Length: 153
Image 1 (cartoon, one colour):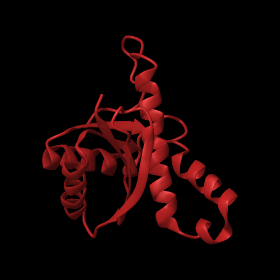
Image 2 (image 1 turned 45 degrees about the horizontal axis):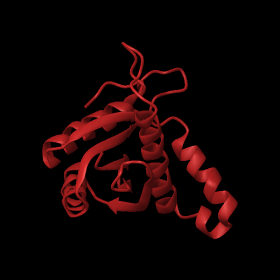
Image 3 (image 1 turned 135 degrees about the vertical axis):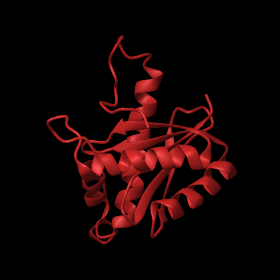
């Protein structure tokens, strides 16, 4: 398995995490700031090429009831744009609770860090990626099941 990138989609900030070369552990959390999705794709493509990323996972914000709302549609559109721009396979991955969990983790670290939204976005990307890698390493999903709960981009 090669390196996988996790992306926490946002309007102006995109959390990024890259796996180890074995595709087992998410790490390298960072944030890409961009005024438009197209600008984000250009910046992310540079990272993909530099780090040798072969696959990308974009967080797909599914509601608690399992439905896809307006933000999910934007994430799916971004995933398609990213796939085309980077020439890589992009999967959507259910990110329910990733931002909440990232915020909880940061609250345990310090009040100063908690206020930094960038840190939250980076940690959310890492959580999305680790969830994806864990599921991938546990074997294929049952026939007809989509572990992401989302349509691929």
